[in-house]
Structure formats: structure tokens, C-alpha cells
Image (cartoon, rainbow, N blue to C red; front, top):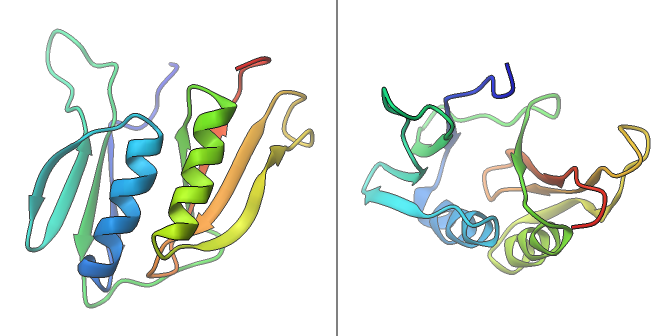
Length: 133
């Protein structure tokens, strides 16, 4: 099984602060916004009976949203440049640095990742696992 997650929801306390942040980081990763409502935002593509190779991310407003340093969401990037754009764009859109873009050989020799905290304190990551991308 190559993909274990079909979809995930990330809870935030302030959707107005989260919206520009997630718009920028998802765009940097080539993931399009597919809906935007007062209580949440959806990115990606839903799976269906003839194609289940996609992932979907929902960012939902919740008064009970809480950050936990041990929890994070990692998104695949198609290139190291996309990881760089994810990090720079996220910082410019109200995120906080949780780990600058770079190789993380403790995972494997080509693991190139970056970490951010969203405006609610959720930790997210982008990674490119390819040797030369």
C-alpha cells in the first residue's frame, strides 16, 4: 500500500488567518483549492471508484483546535524547489519556522524537507524524497 491517507482535516482557531497561509502553501505544492466556505476550506482531489490515487485536505474552523508538538502533517512535494516555495510562502503568509528547507539524512539520503507552524500552531511539513528534483 503506497498511500495510507485518503483525506485529513486540520482544525484551526482562526480561519481568516489560516486561509491565506494554506492557500499559499498548498499552491506551492501544486494542490488546488476546490471549495471555500465560512467554516472551512478544501484542497486537493477526492477519490472515486475509478481512481483512488488522490489526497484531500480540509482546514476547518474549531473553537477547540489545539496544537500538539508531537502531531504534524507532511505533504509530498514534487521538487525541492516546491519545498522551498512552501516554506518561504508560508512564512510570508503568517506561518512560523519549524525547520528550514534542507536535507534530513537521518530519514534517508535524499529526504529534503521543511517545517512550518500554521497561524494556529499546527505543525506541517513538505518533503521531496527524490534524488534530484
